[in-house]
Image (tube, rainbow, N blue to C red; front, side, top):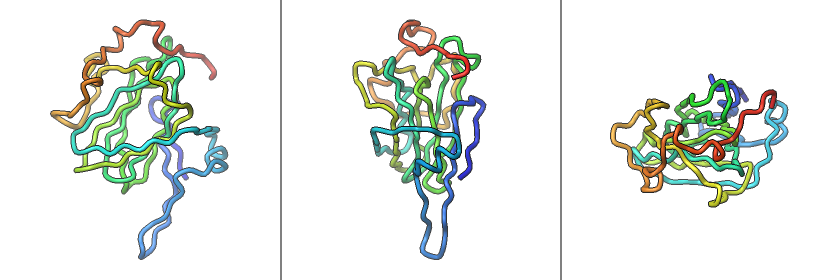
Length: 187
């Protein structure tokens, strides 16, 4: 297993070992002991799966104050996955990182609880899996508009299909400060 920091050091790209032969391939999508040995002490309590079609864009979602860390991967298809640092006081506040993850490259992305998350589907269809560090809580659900000009995320779709809820989110700068997580040095 290979673990790589992104330009947002808390957001990690994880590449599990895939064992291939004439029949296909096999990989472990999560093995607690191996992830801990790689420095990822994660405790997951909820798994989610979504199915989406080409050009669907979901996000940018976060929960506060009950944040959810997420280990995400594509089980079918290909997505462009994005994490945005929304921690007030962070040296990387408002910066984003994007990674193409697919059923073919087997990459996973770990997004910490204090980051906003979204993805868009590049293939005809995609099945996307999330392992979460806390339960979904609709009372703490928040979001940032996917096309926030201050973030300038380079989504690789021209006319994304978004939900009504996601289309109503506001820009990061318009979210009240008490509704955003705070950066804690040496966390």
